[in-house]
View 1 (spheres, rainbow, N blue to C red):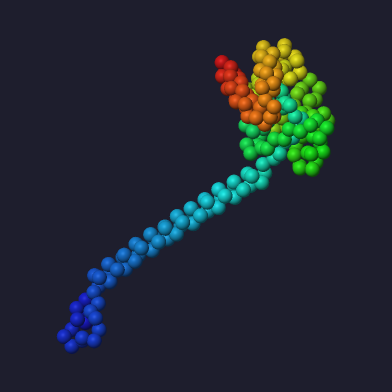
View 2 (cartoon, rainbow, N blue to C red):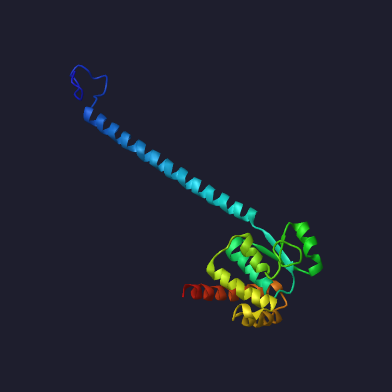
Length: 205
């Protein structure tokens, strides 16, 4: 019997078409890779979603608290700016009375800075901003230029950078305009963004 043609005496079974069978098989063969492709794409999408969620969760778990003295002026605005821009984008900052800094740091796990006898404080002629640059190996020429301005303004050594006295004046004025330290910090961030942009431009000249 030739496949694809029914004999006159055989009516019990349907005819088998080689052409149709081949077509269905080809369609099925094409459908398998398509289904596998869709499954792979779905798996990749789920993996991407899980990776992003895990990354975000790790980021928030690793976000740090930083604590220093209240009523900031220069170093205690410059350092949070440096932390938020280059060290810990999800940082939380606490400004508390001088006498409470180390106690609250111990209770909360916050990292103290710009207070006596801590790693991220003044050491010799260097200020807290310098300590951050050293600890986190931040060697950007614009940041080094900014560090000299901050150091001069914070320590009264205006000879270190022509801009130091101006930064001191603006910082004292900023402090006088805000009773809320965190509100002052929000405005100070813009000020240091601008000063850093100027330092980057000047470093390229």
